[in-house]
Image 1 (cartoon, rainbow, N blue to C red):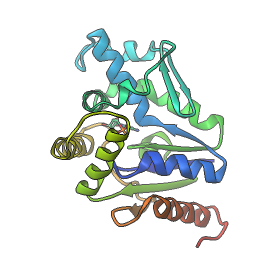
Image 2: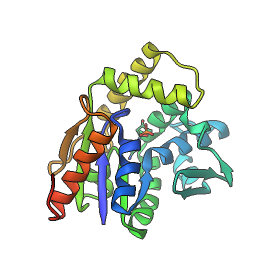
Image 3: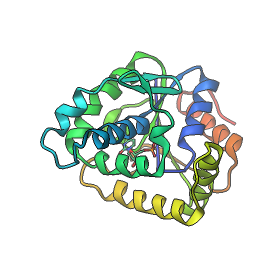
Image 4: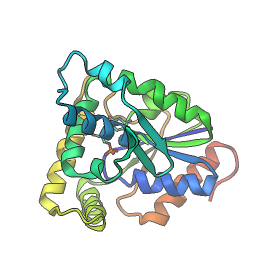
Length: 219
Ligand code: DC
């Protein structure tokens, strides 16, 4: 079973996906983390977004995905991929077709291995167009910036509201205007707007969507 959750940065995808997966007894696959690892690795290696060898470079990366942990060459990079610089790099590299191609097989392999809640930008449109359930999770930009700031503060990363909001708006633009696999709601996805929902409320809403789609009834 594949449950695809797409939406813009800061809509609550990460936490909602993790909690939803727990409730449904699925694993969760965070595809944004894969793009972040690519951005980090390529930046460190000095391989730019225009480099003709970028696709080969990405295909050769040793990325190891475990629930709640991601490793690059055996090294834990959970923290390194969450900085604002890593976000910006991820967004730039995610616009490169060779990067998306290189990550497509990996995402499909990981998603098919188990019942999975998989979150990203193009899961319902490109990676798993025939997912069992598709949700498009969204919220107003200011609300998303507030949440992202709280997350960063909790991780001990220094940031201010204006910078986080600017980063979110910039990424929305970059992610939805790019030529390849832009962020958009799949025609058959159910939209869940979390602007006025707290976390448990958002998870409840998504769980109801899943149960309704799978024919198990909903609240
Ligand atoms: O969800 P996130 O903020 O961790 O994603 C990091 C970047 O990767 C973001 O700019 C969008 C991009 N991304 C993507 O293009 N496709 C995905 N399936 C997931 C993330």
